[in-house]
Length: 127
Image 1 (cartoon, one colour):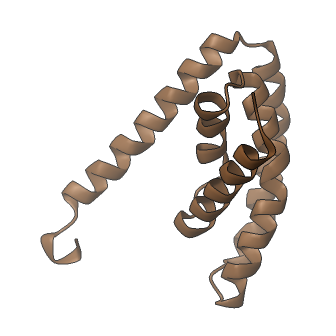
Image 2 (tube, rainbow, N blue to C red):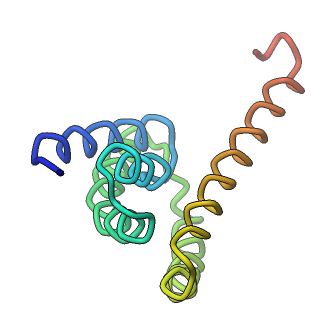
């Protein structure tokens, strides 16, 4: 059963990691909601999307104060994101929940592999 405290802790963890590591909060929110709080994949995805907006706004504000936002990229990327989100939501709603879960896990593993390869291939002086 979800408690308010567990939800607040999940939000705190996801918000801090999303803003500090520059990741979409969903990479943290979805696993926390699925594994930690027992939501099914589709419900976790929808919930994650609903809570990412305030998290992203506050994170953006923090980074913008230090001039760490490339504003020229914001509108084109956001427009693509809006269209992609509409397509993705319809796809997710039509997909089998177990398939969504597996695809999400594969995405996380793929991202981890890419990041590890980048570190391994980086010159020793840059590590």
